[in-house]
Image (spheres, helix red, strand yellow):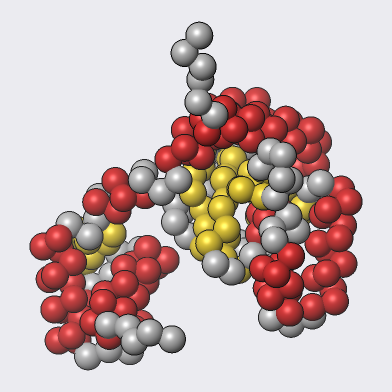
Length: 244
């Protein structure tokens, strides 16, 4: 494995920590990262100068430049998915989240938060978790290349149980979860399958609090239809339009 930059790795770890935990002061961040406070001050000063963090009083949080950078990640998929996600969130009244696979993780690429209900669920754009976890992760994992799926599955605490779960996802075409990534949150996810290969390019999920989680499966067909719309839109974006 190639040698990495220790300082760059520390700076990235600081950004991830601020993203996961919210605003922190240098002392809190130093304790969380188990780094010397002087080192953390230098890291934050550099990140602040470059716009990667912002400062309010003595607390630091991720900077606005990260939003601009995030918009450059898979822009075609975001363009294809955004109107579909807005329609779906409006129709079902629940938060809709789009995940993509990155390495062995599922990463939140985009979300549309429904505002119909006072109690609702939100994710953080860019947050990640193992493909083994959550409805969105398993909806992706079940339809990825076999070597990737095998490698991730074999690292699970109970590989055989996960294999059975993935077989069920493939058979049903959707994945369910509750209380895995956030307590009291239910998820229903379906894969967005590339045409005609049938491999997952993303997963789209509806998230609901416990009070509405038990009826989440009533939105399965709406999610499937949304996934098909996104897949078609992605295919059209990749296909040149004839001049005629």
